[in-house]
Length: 219
Image (tube, rainbow, N blue to C red; front, side):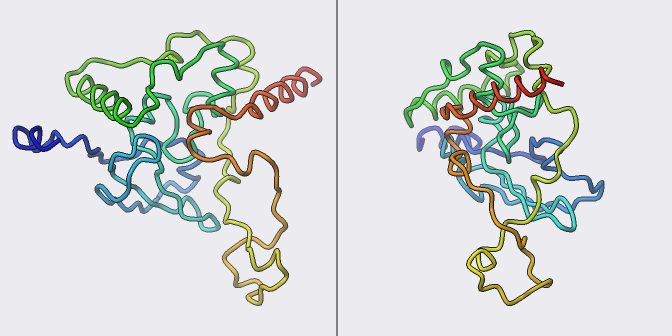
């Protein structure tokens, strides 16, 4: 890395961006959003490279949201930088890949060094004007993906977190508490981490796909 910086100050491989890649649900229903920008504030949770972090509040009753992965990783999977759902269909990565019968993880390395080189090569091709199209962009949509896709934004995803003190019966703030006073909905998918969502390693998403297909077929 040092010899590259001596030749080019822009060759550190760190992301520089002016606006995030986010879905309409994460952006919120308010047309006037005040967004903060912090250059190289955190490292991407996928490729571990520093990137520009954006933070905003999508609504009056919503919690603050921020970008979790860099734009390079977002473009490789065509997902939102916040919720990691597909930008076109609004579905989890594994649900999208299963419905389209593709494996989008084949071209993305898993080791740290190879993953960093792959991301830098993608950025170099983008600066050169060479479009990168991953496997999901080469498959035409079928009836399954069209039935499962989300056509309208889902703003309930931006609600405040559940108050942990309320769950224990110890919250004394009442209506002034900025968190939700309701019991949390727990399940196996609630423990899914960022990398599992990005790579689609959790098989529960496939079960969710089958359940949704059965429900929509009965309509």
